Length: 330
Image (cartoon, rainbow, N blue to C red; front, side, top):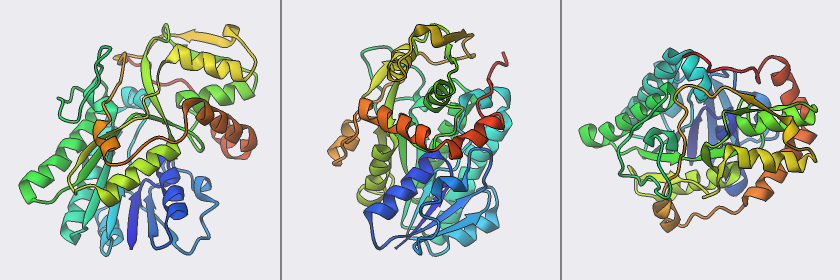
C-alpha cells in the first residue's frame, strides 16, 4: 500500500510519517515537501534510511510534480500549508496561494488519478471564536478571523465541492492546537520552552486569556491515520484532546517546570483579530474509536525533554530568526 504525504517535513506531517512507519509494516510512504522555512529534513533523520520511505522535494502548486507523485497512490494526506497566523497577518498572499491554490492542485491530481482515499488536514480555527461552554460541531458555520484560517476554510470548502460536483469524496479533519517534538520554534510552546532553556523571558500576548485545546502530536497522528483508513471517504471530523487552557495557565505550567515564576513573563501587545477561544466537539472522532493516550502534563514533560536533548535540531533555527516577533501589522 502506498501513501503520499504532502508537507511531511513539517511539524505535524513528520510526526504523522513517523507514527505510520512505526504502526504498520505494509505501507510505503512518499513525502512530498517544498522545504520552505518550517520544513526540515532533520525532523525525519531517524527514518530517512527506512526502505519504506522516500522523499520528493516539490511544491504542491507544481502540477506535474504532484501528478507524478500521486499517480499510483492508494492514499494521500495533505498536510502542506502555510500555518502561522502571525505570518499570515504580515503577508496573506502566500497563504492563499499555498493553502487554497495548492490544495486545489492536490485535490485535482488525486481525482484524475482516482486515488481511493484522500484526507485534507485543516484546523479548528476555521470556525472562529466560541463562548464558553459551547464547542463547535462539524456542521457549524465557518467564520474564520485571520488570513490563515480563511485560507484553510477555503480549502475545506473546495474539498466539499469536489464531493458535490465531481462525486469525488475528500475527508477533512479540523484539528486543535498540537504540541510535541520537532515543532518550529515560532509557535507558543516551542518558543517558550527554548527561551526558558536559554534563561530568557516568554512573550505572552495581552492578558493571556485566550483559550486553546492542546493535543499531543502523536495522538493527533493516530487520529489522522484512523480517519484515513477507517472512516467513510468524504467524512468530516473535529480532533482535539479536550485540554483547554488559557495561554496564561499554559505559561504557568511551563514556568513551573523550569523552576521560575512570573518574573519571566514579558507582556507584549496582542495581535490583530486574535480569537479568544477555540473549542471543538469531538463526539464523532471518539465514536470512530479514537482516544488521546498522552495527557497534557506527560506531553509537556516529553516536549521539554526533547528540546533539552535536541538543541542540535532547534538551535540553528532559532539563531536564524525563527523566534522573531511577527504579526504586528494592523
